[in-house]
Length: 177
Image 1 (tube, rainbow, N blue to C red):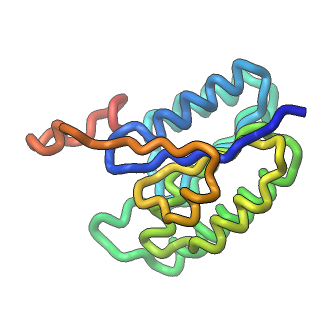
Image 2 (image 1 turned 30 degrees about the horizontal axis):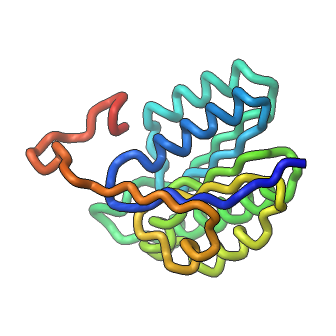
C-alpha cells in the first residue's frame, strides 16, 4: 500500500488549480482514481469541460468532478445557499476520502472558502484528520490558514511577481478560465 501525503498549493500567484489538475492527470495515467471537489467555483470553466470529456473516456468513477460554488464573491457577500453548498462539499469530500475509491482527492479553493466564511478551518482540519494514510490529499487556494500549512507534508506557494491583469487584461478562455 502506497503512502499518501497532504499537499497545499497556496499564494497570490496564478496556477494553483492548474497544478492540481496536472497532478490529477498524472495520477489517472498511473491508474489511480481521482475526486475533485471545487469550492467557490460554480461557473463552467474550460478545465471542467476537459475533465468531463476525460471522465467520459474512462471507466465510470475513475474521475469525479463536483462543483460546490455558486459563483465568485467578488461583487457580493456569501449567502446561506453558498454556506449550504460548501457544507455539501465538505460532506461529499469526507465520503470520497473514506470510500477507498480514490487515490487522489483534490479540494480546490477550500482555503478561499474558509477565508470568505462558507467553510470553517475546523471542517477542513477534520477532513485532513479523516484522510486515510494511502490517500493523497491536495488543498488549493489563496489564504491557507496556518493550521492547514502545519498539517501539510508539502506546501507550494505560488508567488505573483508580475501579472498582465495589472495592465487591464481580463481573464481569457483557455488560459485563466
